[in-house]
Image (cartoon, rainbow, N blue to C red; front, side):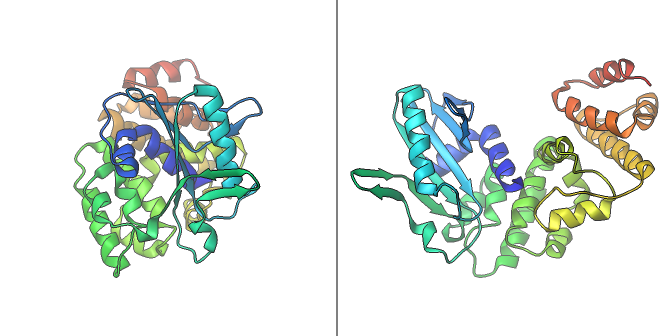
Length: 305
């Protein structure tokens, strides 16, 4: 799910900020853990280890409360696996993102026979937006916070995002903010306040697209992509001629590289434009690991048609 990916990205890249928000503590030693919990693999949304007190923090981001198995049972399963694997205290928090009147968002425990397992619940639509507005790493969550004037809140968030000076952080926080805002706001209003081209240049957005690539579902006409975004899916078969996909794909990658490395010389740009759609998809995944523009040149040299 796209919204899960956004929240996981924020948790993995800004763990100290989320620890401060969700647990009210300052940490200096922190590790982001693998989220696959053996023996029969199950995946938590986010796992963070506080190294000094030796404590596991687990955060589960839920769009809606519906879940199979039930969310309380899932939380117990997570707790058992984590306790077994790390043998240390585990604190669990469920964060509900999208407003609902369901009574399930007020459930914070599993109570059956002689079993009573508790966890903490946060409903985003009840949260004070000021905390999120004051921290760039938390700005995407601000779009879902309480406000008597939601449109005004979105304008404040857009202004705060625009003040982020570091280019890569601006691109990725802007993309995350736009995508999470889609849970609450009309896409036309989001488009009025945020630059759409920033979305396609972001690392997190490209990661979401790559998941679609692996399922054979993505790339095509820009109109189709925007429609998929409106539906909150970021997946689904996007149509378009092969030539159109190739041209758009190379353009997106060149913009990403320019954003990351400052400039891309004409020779490299021409090399990228000659790549097939399949190669462009492969490059879009590879470039996430590149440190310099030289890595791009090396990759192109080894993938010449």
